[in-house]
Image (cartoon, rainbow, N blue to C red):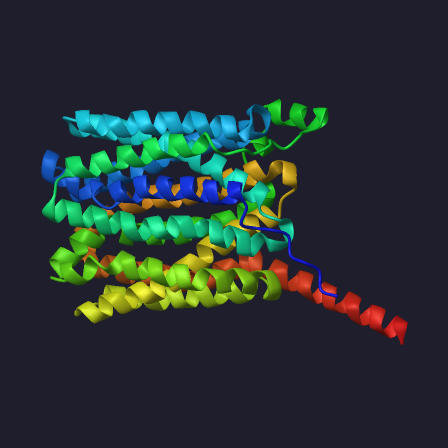
Length: 409
């Protein structure tokens, strides 16, 4: 008789996914327009515009460094609520920005709130999801960000063309307020720690800020996020240069629809067939998508790239987080989640500035061609950092099964 799968779609799982959706809306609505906003309003260079985008990520990185350490000590819901209050306050500050340097300060503070909230929410989700449905559950949880990555950039580009930046700031503030209300209905229990575990978390050691077991896959995903930031930060400017703005306005809709449709299948394959099959395939598809994107001369090419990039990036994002969580003990899931996001933040934060500088040297097409080449190199990097470990584990398991079979015979 087949065992019944543990329940995944609980009230708390749905609520934390909704909170994550609004976090993503707040993030993507601004991420897609901030570099352009800074260049137009304050007449700064593309690299400075990229800095205005990227400094948000460094604020998030700063917050994650401490959230991962203290979440087990202070409580995941308490930290989530504190971060949401800060998110509402800092989002409101965008209405007051009147200089480029003030914009940088607001972006950094907003990043701190984002890092705290997303780490707390991700840890809550990881604790809610049954261990044996980890790949599937994390995949479904990640769909909330996928939906946000479709709606946010689409609305951001639409409002920047036909509305105003003030309308975008208002939408973000409303999303932050809704999150505060949703959290009132969230009923989650904190993970009970032993005195020894609490003592270890309170001590000032590197392993209390970073989960060593999650570092290899997180470092790999850092490079993936680094490459993806080139699209998120400069799609609008690139599309204007190649005269494909109409197609570009639908890029993230198609990108997100592909992730949404493929995510359940990706999660099931992850749980049944293992991570290597998913990761190698996804890296190759993402690299091909970036090549098409860099050479897009027609709208259908740009949208074909959206399909390939969505399929590859979406699979890597959810599978990478699931790998980080599975590799870690339950009481250190907060650290594993923060480690994954911290290194991802470094990639997303450095990318806009690096690629903004590259645009000045080789242009948009040259920059995106370089990104595609980096992605091809990621096939080897994944093998070195994680893939060969998985293969070695599978071979040992096969040997054990074969040995047991011979003993039984």
